[in-house]
Amino acid sequence: MNYLMRRLATFPLVLLGVSILVFVAIRMVPGDSITAMLGTEAGLLTPAQRDSLAAYFGIDQPWFVQYWRWIGGILHGNFGVSVTYGRPVLDVILERFPLTLELALLSMIIALAVGMPAGIFAATHNEKLSDLGVRIAAMIGQSTPSFVLGLLIIYTLSAGFGVLPAMGEFAPLWQDPLRNLSQLILPAITLGLAFAASVTRISRSAMLDVLSDDYVRTARSKGASARSVIWRHALPNALIPVVTLSGIEFGYLLGGAVIVEQIYALPGLGRMVLDAILQRDYALVQGAVLFVAFNFMIVNLLVDLAYVALDPRIRLGEQ
Image (cartoon, rainbow, N blue to C red; front, side, top):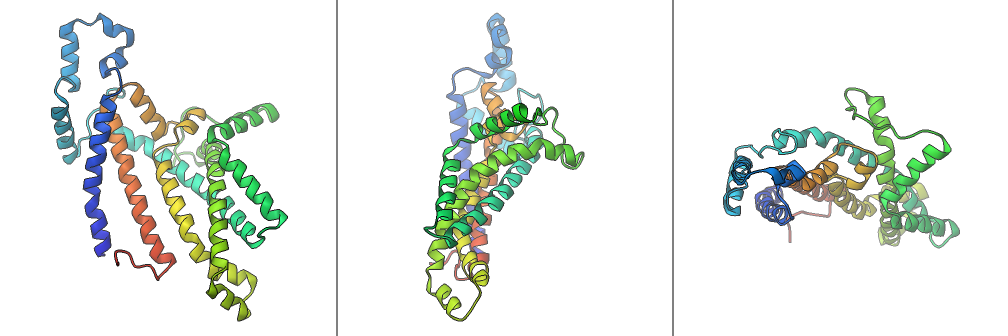
C-alpha cells in the first residue's frame, strides 16, 4: 500500500512536466490557430479582426499567462474548448477514446495469442529447424512496418477477394457489435501481428532462461510431465518480461496508432491528435497528450502490481 501511495503521489509531478513540454512544443510549431482555421482567408483579416480572434482563443497573452489559465482550468475540470470542433476538449477526447481502447485491447489479445505460443514452442524446440523458422518469421514481422502490413492486407482483400475493409461512420460496440468488429478486426490484426513478433522473441528468450533454472530441473527429476514443467513451473516466471513489454506497447497503443488509424479511416485518438496538430488546436493537443500520459502511468502502475502476482518473491518498494 505504501508503494502504491508513493507511485500515485508522483502522478501530479509527472503530469506537470508533461504539461509544460507539450504546451511549449505545440507553440513552437510554425503557424497559429487563426491561420490554420481560416486558411488563405486569414490574409483578408484586418489587424483589429485578427486581434479580436486572438483574444477569443486566448492566444493574445504571453505564454506564461496562457499556461497559467490552462492549468487553472484543468484543476477545475475544464480542459478548454477545441477550436476545430467547437466543443469542450474533454468531451472530444472521451468520444474518440473508446475506439482507441478497443483497438488496443484487440491488438494486444491477437499479439499475445500468436506471440506467446510461438515463443514457447520455439524455446522448447531450441536449435531445431522449427525454432529457426519461428525466429525468421519473428524477425520478418518485427522488421515490417505496420503500415506496410496494413496496405498489404487491404490490397490482398481488394485484388484477391474483391472486398474492402468496412469503413465509414464508426459503429460503437454497444450499438452494433458485428459492424464494430468488422471495422476493427483488420486494424487489430495489422497492429497485433506487428507486436506479436516482439512477443515471440521476448517470450522465447525468457523461456530459455527459465528452463535452465534449478527448480525446473528439480521438477523434471521428480517426474513432472513436460506440459506441467512448461505451463506450471516455467511460464509464470517467464511472463515477467512479456508483461513489461506488453505494458509499454499497450501504453503506446492507447496513445493512438496514428498511421493505422489513418489507413483504415478510423476516428481514433491518434488521428484526432494529428488533425489537431495540423489545425494548431492547442487546447485539444494539450488535453489529449495529458490524457494519454495519465493512461500510460496507470498502465505502468498495473504492470508493476502484476509482477507481484506473477512472482511472490518480488516485494515492491523494498530495498
